[in-house]
Length: 116
Image (spheres, rainbow, N blue to C red):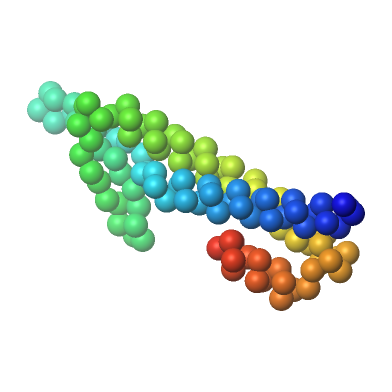
């Protein structure tokens, strides 16, 4: 297998990974947990932003740790997605420079894997 073939295989592997992580992120809650004390009672809310609005959902005490863990997992995956995105861009530039792929082929691959 030539170096160019290995680079192309690495690109498709990264695009697969990117797509999989996007699906994981979509299934997890976004935002953060806020704590409010009302009349001496502690209430927890998951808050997130949609456009200019901050939305809230009450989180019962029994579900609090699970929701916190899911938010942490989402944030970790979002950071991993940033790293993978940089690697994909770098590999695409190398493949274009080596004339292994054309601009159209890169765009087609990106669309196939829903890469933005």
